[in-house]
Image 1 (spheres, rainbow, N blue to C red):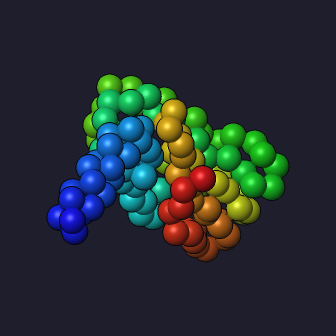
Image 2 (image 1 turned 135 degrees about the horizontal axis):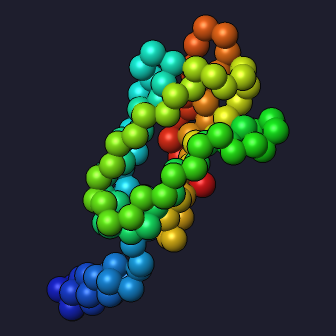
Length: 118
């Protein structure tokens, strides 16, 4: 009886996994600051249409927008040297969701928050 219950539970969990669409949690995003620029590494994009945007949290002005198609991995460098001091949000979007990271730029440094689901 225990074996039957365990088998049913395993089968149901497998069905649930198969029914769940792919989500952006599978996308790996890593950023690093290098000489007043932000290096963005993306992996496991599964060739889905992906967009990268950088916008000000204060003025809502978009400073960078880029669309990526037909790539599994991608790397780009965003020049932040001409941006005014302030708070910015970096977003990586796919149809299934988005990731975000907050950046704080001041005169001498760039601080990056932890990457989170949006």
